[in-house]
Length: 227
Ligand SMILES: Cc1cc2nc3c(=O)[nH]c(=O)nc-3n(C[C@H](O)[C@H](O)[C@H](O)COP(=O)(O)OP(=O)(O)OC[C@H]3O[C@@H](n4cnc5c(N)ncnc54)[C@H](O)[C@@H]3O)c2cc1C
Image (cartoon, rainbow, N blue to C red):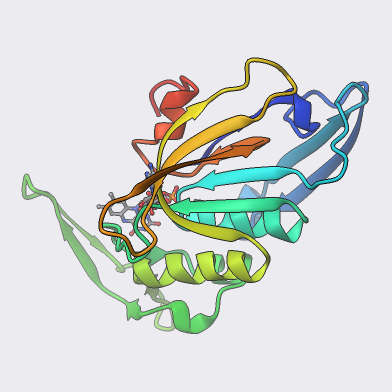
């Protein structure tokens, strides 16, 4: 799950729709059957009181280059936002079963060959020896699609870069939050550009998306609570 932090300065924040000029994106989730179909609604709001950015684009840092970060960075870059995608380990193969609902292929516009294995029978055994068999209800033509996480994550990150995002092989360390509405977020990170030891660097942005996984440092920096 991704956490997101904006400051009101940027004119791009979650807000009530009243008294604002707003632009909303409404997308049905194709992974649900019609009876479950619901609409996810994202309101991108620019308030009249929001200061205007002149002479440059909005700058957003996405921390974490897993599926959430890669997809978010691509969407932002396509929207003309100056996007910086941070990933500490570009060849990371996250411990993950790798099964995805097949509707995700269409929803995320993935190539079919991203499916590495087509599984029709799967038995999962827990450390306490409880087992569950998956696949009994599959019809003859159905299967569980399995991806290799390093392949999927790289594919999504590469597509973000192709859309204009800048990828930084770095470890996000901490963030200085703005004390004033006109101040930026300052992200401190170690960059690993081919050097054995990371080099400490920082960047100023208008908004931060924390897509850095279960133990998110971004979430901790904004006191997001237990995730
Ligand atoms: C054992 C296991 C099995 C699973 N099996 C499945 C499955 O079969 N199917 C399924 O759909 N889901 C499965 N999941 C869940 C799935 O892995 C997560 O839902 C998914 O990875 C979340 O994606 P994400 O992009 O939010 O975060 P992540 O995939 O966790 O990505 C976070 C990224 O941020 C990077 N990062 C973290 N901290 C920093 C930092 N400080 N600076 C820079 N980069 C950072 C990490 O290197 C990582 O690449 C499984 C999870 C586990 C643990």
